[in-house]
Image 1 (cartoon, rainbow, N blue to C red):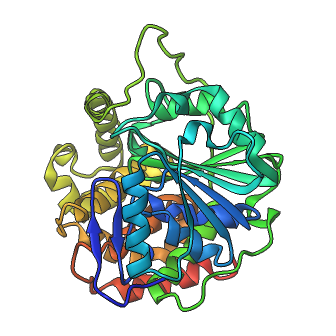
Image 2: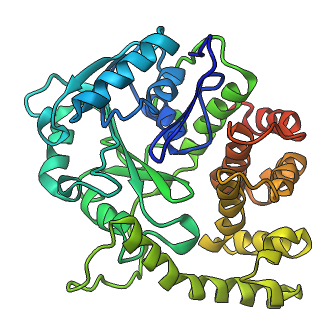
Image 3: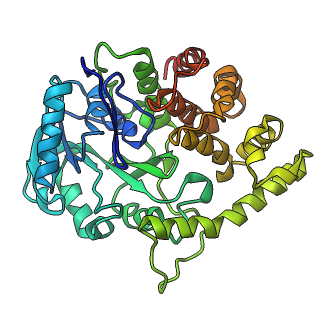
Length: 389
């Protein structure tokens, strides 16, 4: 699972580090798949540089993985990369069109969909025939995982117009159980045929975990199991406005950035109103100072969490996102989570498990910044919070 020679590969699509499996980005969440059900035979649609392979191996060490990519050069480069640095992480690379690969295939226990055309979605991802193929390719009790990129959680991505809204509209009728976990601008969508009433925490036997994981990788794996138990339904919220049939769904980075800018003022207005209601300095809302003042950011965020508002993910998302830009100025947030996780588990369990603790772990696992002084205390708190989960 680890490279004996130094490796740090950072691209817009993949982050790989030889000394850790989990790096704080969305592919880490593919470790969820084997926790949701059987995973003896796995198909990965969209290989890239192999960011999903070791997270899958962490929770399904004995599985057979077939990885599909349309680009023969990418398949060749990734195969060579893994043979050199991760020779024990075996997989079969297939050069094929992901849209048609599953037609007539043998059944898979787990199908992972991580397919992009450049920086946008290929058309077939937003069309029902492809998802019918995915359903038909799954063995009984099988699971499909989708990386759905678009708007961040604090901007209500399940409201139109957004790719996550379009996908929820498409997929919810096809799967009895559709749930998701957020990672900043990504959602990892978990699709199962198990009735939605069946709790994820007990629906599948405990998955084996790869031996020899580092303390950090063990902590992330343990938290993934707890996050799965608290995953939210991948459904358009009740009372959501109907999408405008003449309005295009934003799909490209430029379109999505424009949609984020359109939603930003309403979200900030809610945060400001919350600050005023609890009597803290609302004048810094919308400025950099908000994130650097724990005396404002924390009480406002916790009040938003108490109300169950999506804007409660603003502070954790920004703190983690900045670290991936090399900015460590919000390290105080990770330290605060490390110190307060056990009390937060009592008062704000859903927010802690779904948002605060995952993003603090993302900050700690990030190989692009120096080690944090609070990493070890954080791992101890993770072990405490996840004990018995």
